[in-house]
Image (cartoon, each protein chain N blue to C red):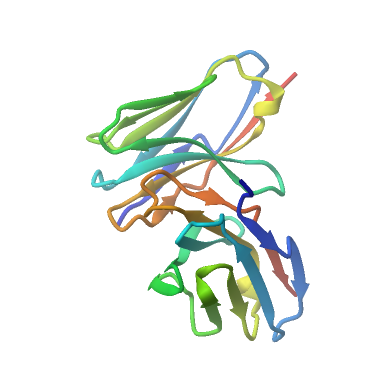
Amino acid sequence: EAGVTQFPSHSVIEKGQTVTLRCDPISGHDNLYWYRRVMGKEIKFLLHFVKESKQDESGMPNNRFLAERTGGTYSTLKVQPAELEDSGVYFCASSQDLGGYGYTFGSGTRLTVV
Amino acid sequence: KQEVTQIPAALSVPEGENLVLNCSFTDSAIYNLQWFRQDPGKGLTSLLLIQSSQREQTSGRLNASLDKSSGRSTLYIAASQPGDSATYLCAVAGNNRKLIWGLGTSLAVNP
């Protein structure tokens, strides 16, 4: 089966610009998660979708971040306007159940805001 | 609040050595614990998943143990190879299934 796909793999944008990250989960996985790693810190949870619904968005840093999962398939994470502290690696993961049998992660999107 | 600590932060060993990576967590009420590997510029690859009711899991040269009561897990790598060089991350899932991560151990296995 195809894994979790994320694109772009890298993005360099200027402060104030908008960037949209995309994640395609494994087909049939209802649960989709976004995580982020800022340089030098632990990977942190951002949010969790079950199908198209946001189950938990407690980790979203602020209202400059908007996640969507239309139709319960792929998900997008938009940062608008981007700030320097948004730089990091954004990971997406999917699971068939609620993670009881683990998660499959994508390769991540490395975002650099300059 | 769950916190996950990994020791050591970095490790460099000659090829062939057996080694142990450590992970500790502060709240023993976990759902499961997962070890991941990350290669430079790559994604996160799941290595082993241990459910809260289990004590250990094995896959090839890898063995992970879990002691919930003491809040510890170890990842044992037997007969290390240069291809094992990577960052190893420990992540704990609570009942809400969110993963809480350690900072990782950067492993270098030298030929």
